[in-house]
Image (cartoon, rainbow, N blue to C red; front, side):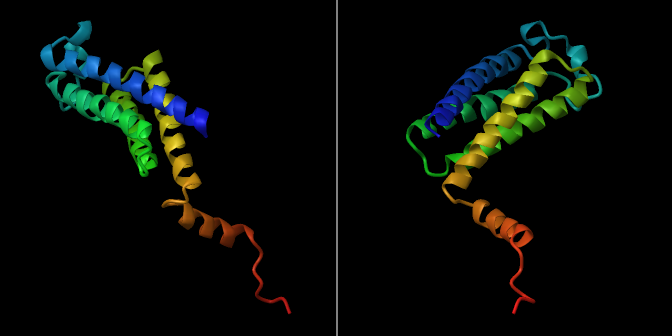
Length: 152
């Protein structure tokens, strides 16, 4: 699990730094951040990139940097943080693709990075026997372990 945590730390830092940069660009130049045309937002509820930039900067930028720090400090509930950030990224990418009606390489890349981040978080929760691990073990045991009823 040590190498998996190193991978998660690297993902937190890379995602965090990238999201801080991209989010900052959207906040300071909301009409054309990094050359992105405003026409990309057609059909969306946004008139500029400002609100998406705030979410990108705050949730994924600051969130992942804080996640990296807490992982390094061995924060007990880090599995939840990784799960929320990874799941949030998957949701963010899906919504973004639906809004802009285009799929680029970075969408695919960050979609899978989100899945990896969330999966590592889930694995950490299972290893620590934290919720939902006990619940899942109970369900699996009822589904796959033969019942003792009827044996005599």
